[in-house]
Length: 121
Image (cartoon, rainbow, N blue to C red; front, side, top):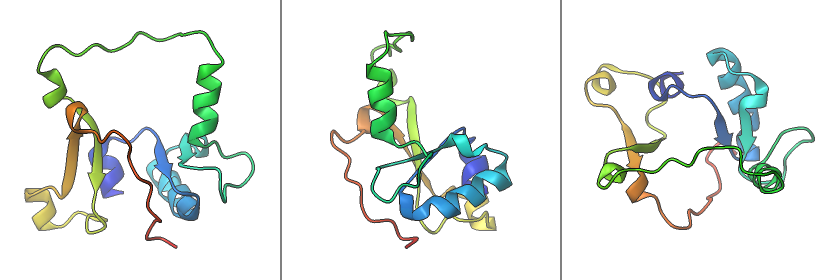
């Protein structure tokens, strides 16, 4: 809950192995199950969307969005996403004074992120 509320989560993207944990977290936080997206199709139960499926869906439609264009220098300060370590599952006195998450800005995103096996197996 601490991670979800700190990042003001609107969707959860997770590995299929962690789906049950994501479902419980989403329910407790007040997100619909439709707001859970899986990283890949392997091991995905029927009816749960996965990233490639969403990319294909978007690619088959005409553009219906306005591209965000950052001004020079904004990519260094605009948060792209938060990454939490496994040690930030709950708020402690230390965490409330020193947040234990990493904010990645648009300019710091890796070109090809690698999906590792999740720890919740």
